[in-house]
Length: 350
Image (cartoon, rainbow, N blue to C red; front, side, top):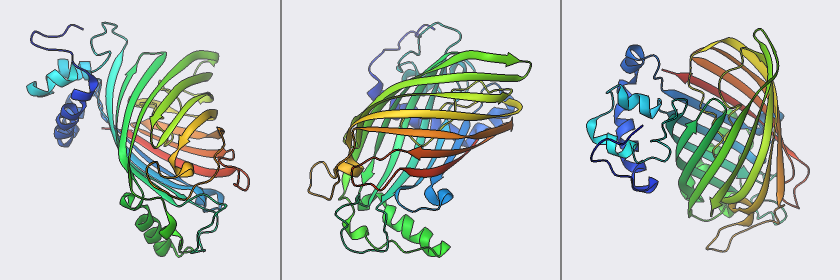
């Protein structure tokens, strides 16, 4: 697609704020848009992850996130639904002018919070041989470029670690409402520190190696990296799915950087079972290494961590519900065994 006269092509950092404003201004009108242009759906993903599903309350103990994904930007621009002033920001995005008609380009905005605690939350003293209390509340903006077989994601996360994340208030409120043990060690949490992370990940959707009518078995692989004071790592992994009317997406989404698979199309009735693995070579993890610029409690992290996941997904028209069970290998030397948690994701478009 060619850039209209008068458009320039500066970097991504100058266009995200304007594009964010433009798309959020449009959000209230999306229900009428969906009725007029069913080919241009917005997507909402709601994530809930917690180790209560496995009967524990430690390590990565809770994660929540909600994300909004735009329609395909190029089709959206051509539909005339986008305000004139925002077009300049759209055309500044990377890959936006690639003429390949199979490419879809979407932006995603997310708000999330992760909570980490040691094993014994009844203690009020500093537990020197266990991980620190920590919270991470963040805003993320991502740009997805996908074809039928490949998806690239560039994501920027900005947030706060420490008391400013309000993780303490969240956990204490939920535990009070549910009658669970009150967490008493939050006085020893990480100190306030602004967090920034830049993430890139590429996913490949491989052709089904078994396909009979509506039944199929396929595979998805990924390779990525993250850089920032919150986490710095390289990761890779794969997923295999077995089911009926497999969706045209890139696997199961979890609360992890660039983990979204950009589900955004009306599906037939169907469902599948899946198994996945994601391995990380970790250079920096603030939730284990402690604060970057201030003294805080820390533990000896392990350089390699693996997530093994399995579960099932069902979908009908504009809804998709996914249940995932995750086993995460030890993240630090003092940790007592592996960690497990469950994940529930509801996706829908409008």
